[in-house]
Image (cartoon, rainbow, N blue to C red; front, side, top):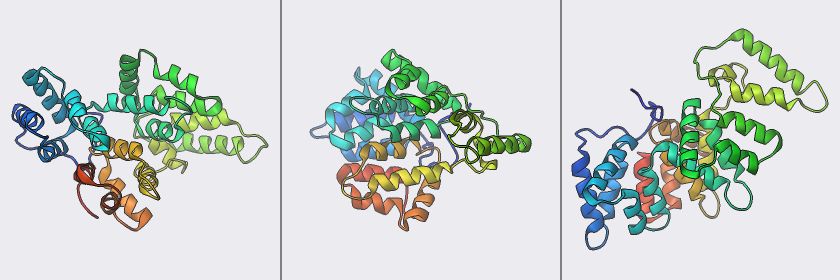
Length: 291
């Protein structure tokens, strides 16, 4: 059965001749030796898919009696540590943790919430909701309700419930009707009928929304997020790590193309000039090439 977390435009593909126990042993040596062998860690973890990395983690635990993510946390540091731990985390759990971080402490990181909730499919959202509850013993919906308000809250809750239509079929008649509703709700009257907007934009399938010309191209949206994360003084590693890891098996090739279109230079060169050390090496391997 094809994973709901894998697309056709990723930079990381299944590693041929994959042997999880051989990889687990190599990682054990890399971590246990005098000083960590980062080169081995990077080459194994960036050249295997998430499904393969999770099998390595399972073998590692059987071999060492400890969780691979805990040993990586104990052995590595800084942004490099966060990136490597993200690589050995199941996608739904990774997204659940990112959502939690976006709602933690003072103020909510609304951009991160919007990014995750609008770019995941309904099936993915259902898995994320389950992972969230397992990790935090509180439903994602309850968390969103307590951290946001108004129409923004309503839209996020619909998205978090994974209720978007997933079909690829488009209905021209429905599109015309929706377009009219959006027009009536928006331009034609003082005060906007946000409920109509929210229902249509959050529940219709993406192909359906493209027909009404109000769906953004996901890779272009994520390329813009990366551009902002890498632009100016300081790097937004929270956003950079999330997009690079979560899209590496879905559409990172398309995101790279959109990044170049938007900025005039490649994502690879932007990462190269903005990061350093093992963190840079790992991101460049995930990026998969220069454009």
